[in-house]
Length: 177
Image (cartoon, rainbow, N blue to C red; front, top):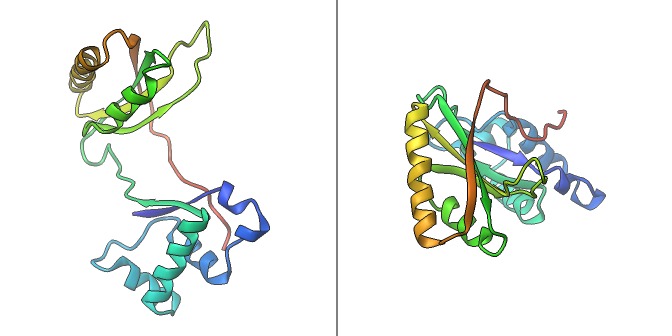
């Protein structure tokens, strides 16, 4: 689990973290401790009560200083070596509904809308699917396409899948201690 600081949330002086908030961000930007009570362990490390850590994190979330707290799995380490970004050319009138549908599917780890870059790039909806093989990913994307064709007739004009060719290290905004 890690805390992802929001670059936008750190742009104004009003959102500059206080000293404890800054210490929490620095202590967690590489991940929370993998123990039964990560917040308690963090509080112990920082020398403050657990309630203070939780209240400070809640305040940073509310103000947008941190964007989210979430698990960041290493897909390769758990056997998901085929990573396919499905790209879809969806009619603008249906893209929000199709996006909500895809985002709600168990096989889709993240889904977002992007502007087209015509004439070379007609795709406006992206949905990542991980699998143990390209065949598994292709089959899942084909199944998603069948449901889209049924639930949203004529909304999908074309689609493709882009596969990862190398592992990129993913990190959020980092601040110096």
